[in-house]
Image (cartoon, rainbow, N blue to C red; front, side, top):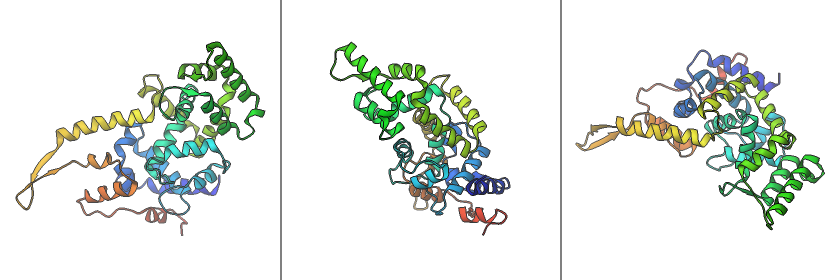
Length: 305
């Protein structure tokens, strides 16, 4: 076990004695989102321990290099960079704990069929529901590298695209999700590098069995069909907005005016940056209880400096 994983195990042990939702603000802020992914408090604690072990700079945010170094993946990997880019919701070049959990869950819980659709969505940049020849070439280059044409699976893909173009008699062919899914089903080697990366992340982050459980639960959420993480979270957000609207309490302010007091669930739905979400959570804390910082948490780990 490497130093990072040893540190993660130690932090996880420390978390056994406390509630991650009571002591870690960003975990509490996003509790409903995590629960929508069927992650319980113990699951979140395990993921927080891994996140903390990767965050070697102590910024509570991860850079791409930190992430790649932890996973022992090449520092110049275009496919990983693209996956990392969609992790980064606020596009600030780093990912916070919420972005880490949602994105790692999204990638590591994909089945073989779902990974095919994930890859398709990744390159359907305009959301048209189709990818063209140039986007297929871009995908192959990201997955296989600059010398992608030297790889037989990649050449087979482009040969199939060319045959499809000739059959349709078009200058440019557009591939639908059904066509792409059918092809990857019969040519499993096409996405082998993507599956290899998924396996590495599963082993490094909580273990393969953890993600098998998450994959099964994801299938249940989608009734056996592929469903994006955004659809899951948007459905949860819509349901919570409805509850907040029903539960809103009107309370008289000190100046005689009425002010609306929104339940703490509103903080969970905050969609701003990590700093904005943290400030919102701080404003809604009324019990005066001090929270553990990440540094204080790590200090609880035996042998920590």
